[in-house]
Image (cartoon, rainbow, N blue to C red):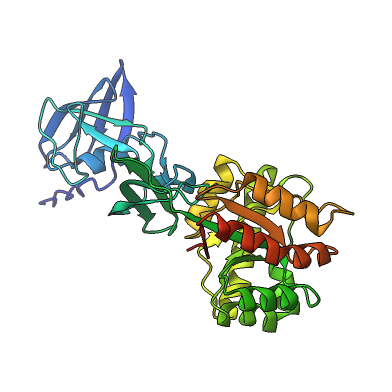
Length: 353
């Protein structure tokens, strides 16, 4: 009687066993095997095994890297895969192994998001940032923008040319709009044919949008002065998230009125590298001042304001005054004498751009 031999089923399950310091991959006997080194230990794997397959089979692990934004901050944690090494060099997962190959993994390096680069040549010069005067320095601006975060980083490379200073002065007004004092100041500026710059507080723009539009229609420059005008702690010491919110909300309120703010003045003039970077990312420029007659001080007179301005004003000066935040009647009264005194010195009055 003949007995039919039982057919042996080919092995379809792979098992890794450790024996005398050697990893052995046991598979069907109808496949050739390769001898490779996995993470410093010899091993046998089926012919046709890929680099990625070997890493998975032997459970090799390394740390993933972070995706960074254009400023170097973590945008997405642990999303950059570890590096797969073949013979100590990074290789694609699909690479087929050969006998004698060395297989390992390495911690991933952090990777920066894709960045677009724009170079803007400014032979006529650009203002400093933060800006204290109307002086301009010739050079080149390099603008980097993150493709994912949309953050912008602007750097300036001076060309070595001489700094130019206009024979001009900029009058700027903070803390408005005020329903009492802003219309009076706008009327005086109109009669004196003076363009000026108004740094507007966001929540006041919500309350008095018609005054902001009146400034715009009068040819004034309207800038961002934050949304809430926080003073404690100083603006430059705010947590980053709160600083960003104050700048962006102030800008949004003006944008809703059709105003495109290009300038930002930090409340109280409190600036820092973080303020400048955050303002740059919003597409604005930080503006401070070089002449402060302290018209905000209780009890100050129009005569004192005039004297302080004319004593300090120079070509390129930026003068800070106020149309809101308190009693500004002395500022209103001082304007004609300030304007006449500046013009007598042969200086023009300009709005900032």
